[in-house]
Image 1 (cartoon, one colour):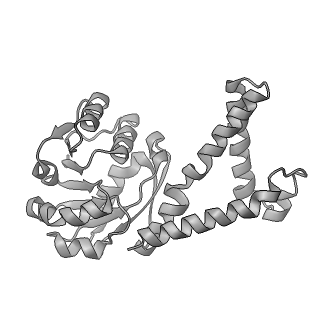
Image 2 (cartoon, rainbow, N blue to C red; image 1 turned 135 degrees about the horizontal axis):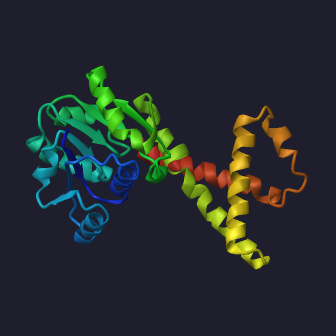
Image 3 (cartoon, rainbow, N blue to C red; image 1 turned 60 degrees about the horizontal axis):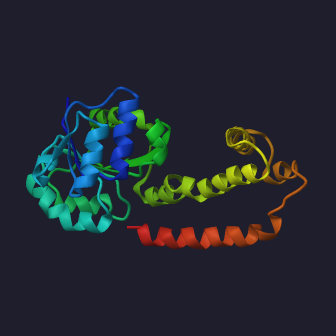
Length: 255
C-alpha cells in the first residue's frame, strides 16, 4: 500500500478520513503533520490508526502527499516541501488559487493533482472535481481515483474550471443550510415537532431538487406550480447580493 501524508490536519482532512472510515477503506499508512496540538489530538481520538507526526518532513516523505494548507501558506512551504518530497511522489493540492504550473516549477517530479473537495464527502456523497498535470499516466490516474472513490463522485475537469466549482459546488451548502435551519425553527414556532419539521423539510427539498433538475418543466412552468410566493418581493435583492458576493470571491480565489 502507498503511504499517505497530509500537510495540515484541519476540517478537510477530517472529511477525507471519515469518508475512508465509513467505507472501511482507510489506508493503512497515514501520517499527518498538524501544528495545532488540539486539532491533532482530536483527529487521533477519532481515527486511532493514523500517525500524528511532529516533523514536517515525515509527512512529506510519503508516496502520496496531500497539501491541506491555505494558499498563502502553500506558497511559503513549496520550497520546504520540495526538499523532502520523493521524486516519484504524487502531490494532491486541495487549495484554490495556486495552479499546477506554479507548483511544478518548485517541486521535483511532475505528478501534481489539484482537487476541490466537498463537505458532503463526509457521508461519501461528495462531488469532487480534479485536474491532473499533463505527465500523469493512466495507471497513475486510476490509483488516485481509486483512493478518492469513497469520497463520492470525482470528475476530471480543465484546471481553469476548478475555482468555479469551488463557488457553485464546494461552498454551495453554506448558501442554503442557514435557511433550512430557519425553516426548522419556524416549524417549532408554528407548533410542529422538530423531528416532523425536519422530515417535512428534508423530503420537500429532495423532491424540489428532483423536480427542478429531472423533470421536463422549464423554470417558469415549475415556478408556476406554487401560486403563493411569499419572498417574491425580496428575490431580486437576495439574488443580486448572492451574485455580487460570489463573483467577488471568485475573482479573489482565481489563480
